[in-house]
Amino acid sequence: MAASASEVPVAVRATAPEPRQLVEVRRRQWLVSEVDAAAVAPELPKRHLVKLSSVDEDALGEELEVLWELEPGAHVIERAGLPAITGVDDGNDLEAFLDAVRWGTATNADRGYLQAPFRSGISIEDYQLDPLVRAVDMARTNLLIADDVGLGKTIEAGLVVQEMLLRHRARTILVLCPASLQEKWRVEMAEKFGLDFRIVDTDYVKRLRRERGVHANPWTSFPRLITSIDWAKQGEGVRLLRDVLPPYTTFPRRFDLLIIDEAHNVAPTVGKYAVESLRTRLVRLVAPHFQHKLFLTATPHDGYTESFTALLELLDDQRFSRSVLPSEEQLARVMVRRLKEDLVDADGERLYPKRRLEALKVEYTVEERRARELLDKYIESREADDDRDGAASHFVHQLLRKRLASSPAAFSSTFARHVATIEGRSNTATRATAIDDRILRRAIARAEEDYANDDTLLTRGLSEGGQADLAQAA
Image 1 (cartoon, helix red, strand yellow):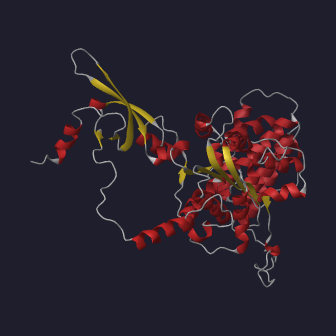
Image 2 (cartoon, rainbow, N blue to C red):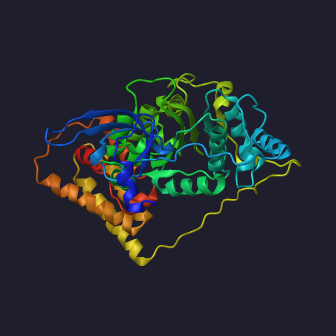
Image 3 (cartoon, one colour):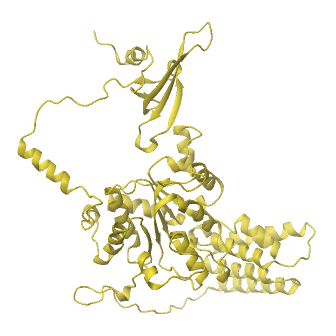
């Protein structure tokens, strides 16, 4: 008589599993690596300490130890194995199948044959194949894709990602981008290339720990991840990154492909001094542990050689050095830069219409004019009373004007933080000290960094770190 479904787990767990058996524990599949029988207490029967190794794709290599008899729901997967052969295909069908496999398999030996353009769900422009061809030709892909706005840098990066996955040159991929672009990246990779990416943020970490335990690390939870660079640069994000990164550069690298969107945001800022922000430090931390790197930006050069060369050094520190301007030949090897006015079709016609700039005059309402007048009067009174170096105060005041022009919500949040800082400072003794230029530059860099995305500005004022430095300098 067949056993009922409720009796099966008990029967299967009557004895401990054997090494190399496949088991299911905590809703995941594991391979038994070792079984150790030990007496927990004299009055209790023997328990078996079973050491397991994960075989799931998104947690390959993870290890777990359980007491087999006490683990709820643990059971041996009895039917794991190869299916029984019940028939043989016709020779012509087998030959057609082998041809399909051969034609559909990309190899590193054949660099002239690309598969990604034919496996993507998009209409590709000819110029978008240039980064893909370069990436395939490079033994170690380090590319700065600096095409003009609207030319499809995300599409070009997606083609590179898909081709490298097909050629087994990459498996683990991390996309660092502004918070407002995370969902855009996830949707485009899924809809246009059929690639599943997961967004790493605070909610993802909480959900992961509920499912896999408090020691689960999000950076090793899935092969393809997207995260906000501002989330990863500090706090729990960077701490968890340090937990999975080796103390020194290893080969093969810990991860495969790093993509940074809006890469100009990670270059050292504030003019010729090129002060490193938290974003820069994050990239400098993780970049050596990736075999391949793609930097995407429409504005690679901010006018300062120090900042530009530092960005190139982050991309490829074997080829570029900070403060050393590369030659055009060296730059051409790693940078793809096309403007809309430079692109033509086979007949020599422009692909994009000529850009025509037209200034649109904006009429302010009476309330908006009144608000600006009140803000100007407030700033004038503050600057008149400031008998110290007013550089930092001037920066804060310009920031208030910028927030007012952005939106009432942005100004309200920023001004509330500004007032709270002034009130808190008035309750403590102030010291007349000289303002160190380097401290001021770092404060400005941090504040500008936190205001990079207008979406964030609507819900945040000055960051606590930037506000504290500016409050001391003001």
